[in-house]
Image (cartoon, rainbow, N blue to C red; front, top):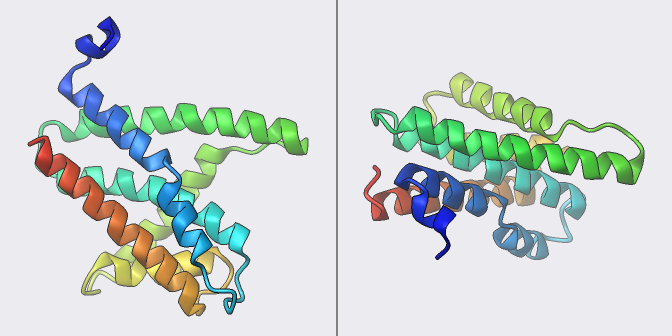
Length: 173
């Protein structure tokens, strides 16, 4: 372990771990590879939206599971600042590749607002995944596509569970 890793506080390490979890693409790739050809939604769109949803779900989970914790604000800020830097790099790279400015962080913020508004509209839903799945499918272009609904729901459930388990394991929750 190098000196900078030794000097990180528990909350900084947690923020870094959650950031790395959010941008890890293995589960996104797995869900995308299993996505049904019978769907009317393009696989590339599903993959793109799954990554957005995963990043958002990690951030949402931090706020949800640490709602009453004094660590919530610090960890939330660390996480979203890392996502902002990551987004800046993606925006710059994408802009160079396609010759058009893209603000990936703004895309994330807009999508987060979409999901939060949907959750607020359907506050009586038995669980958030029931709302997130159809919203995810809508972001993919077809809110009624059962395959997209299931892909979004599955990723959301797995991501939220992963964050909860991690926070419990490190005893931050």
